[in-house]
Image (cartoon, rainbow over the protein chains, first blue to last red):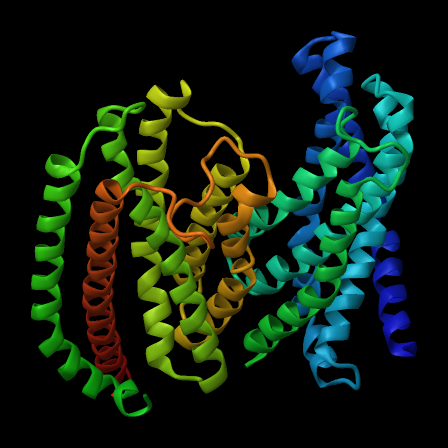
Length: 222
Length: 239
């Protein structure tokens, strides 16, 4: 457990000190949210209708964009080799990397989403469902991203394959995420059925994704 | 099972089976197409367009069947580390992708006169489209990783992860209210489709299955040959 926390702390420190991390993801999020009304036009009704979907797609893209950096730097400087020799099983290493990725990418965006939703005239009753759904959904996204990152670690043309592999797996998260936040389907209260399914997906990913990533990383180390 | 997993023995055996399998495929297609395109009655609502179903439904079955084959072969390859299982998984992917594409195209052709649109984003259609993307991603891995053993392991894990989509496709029409009609052949209370239409459909399904096995065997045989050539070339370069 101590090593596990230390690994998360290391990744967070790296993300902050390298200047990328949280700021970069938020910057990307903000840029898309500003560009969107310029591209679609300033019709507030229309923006309000597409706001949850737009926020979700942007979240998905920012997770996807940062996904290939989950294992690649560690593979480049050799620390991935050290992890595989260390005391902690690779499953937990993969889980720690996924959590660190979630804290630096998904979580800040989920917290910022209601604020950015204001820019898109998002209905204020949707703030809480959006926050909850995005928090949960982005965790599933980060976990799935580690699978893709583990597939493409060490590959030259990894980025494109990563998107091709991960996007199909993102579809369920996107569908239920939008359903949990799109006004007409959202159940009264925060814990509607879509949100429960989202929780189920996140929990399933929490168990399965580290196992798959660890198996992939071992195949890479051979 | 282990006995026939030896590539040389498999090669010899499949060479003997292949002509018979190909002949059976041709026969099944001849009978199936005759029944489907000539003999089967028009549907009272759909008219002649019902015949698209005889091409569409078996293709969709095979799309899922091929992916299940890949997943099964991948699991065997991962557990017993057998190269022939890896080859079998690899070779099923392009065939499965073609079946999936055929199902999507014929479904779209049928949807235009019946639903009035080429495509709707409903659960069944979307999940089959996702299956198509999974096939592409799976094939991309084999392309991207040069070393066959590593490619096999990575591709196998990805195939197993993607397998969650297959039950989603099967039950998507039951779980969500879908524009696509629910299952009408494999049902608890017997098929909901008349015998005159069911018989050609089943024959076509058999024909598609035989076609898959024929193509799969040919693909595995050529892949084995390709690997042997690669080994010989490598030996020459090193020697």
